[in-house]
Length: 192
Image 1 (cartoon, rainbow, N blue to C red):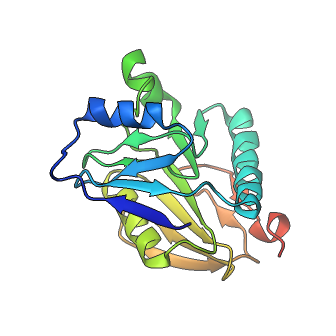
Image 2: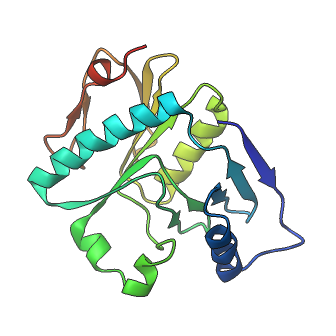
Image 3: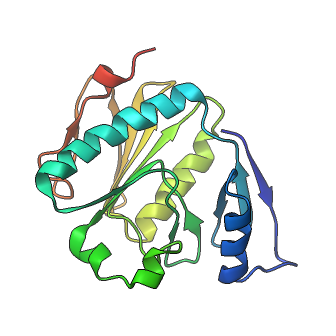
């Protein structure tokens, strides 16, 4: 999706001011990068939203059985160790990690990096920018990240080792040691 970046070096919004900006503009999808630049994105287009929901549902069903963590949708923002506030399309955090946060922290853009995230590329997303965002997730503590490129039917798999692999949709994605027994078959849920 296309986004607008607002360079805010002169405004230098505090975390509280940024929270208020987001609270007063709930209709917008807003993130902030590590340099405190504000990024405003268009809402997800209908087809992408359909795919996001189907993917989130699969993760949610797995999590219901495992009961080992919590799933979040694209509305949940997280403050990363580098100061960025990001909102992935789908994310998951280990139960003990989330439960260790204070209620006040949970009620804001929690200061935590999800253990697993998924970003789904829509037709208007810039692939280079999304890949940089995926690297940011991993650098800040994410253990497994999938960038799903629907247009090209490829998933980029990111791991803390720095390894990035590509996998076509006709092969199931495995949650590995982060999400044991979780498998996602994109060719079964994303049809063009």
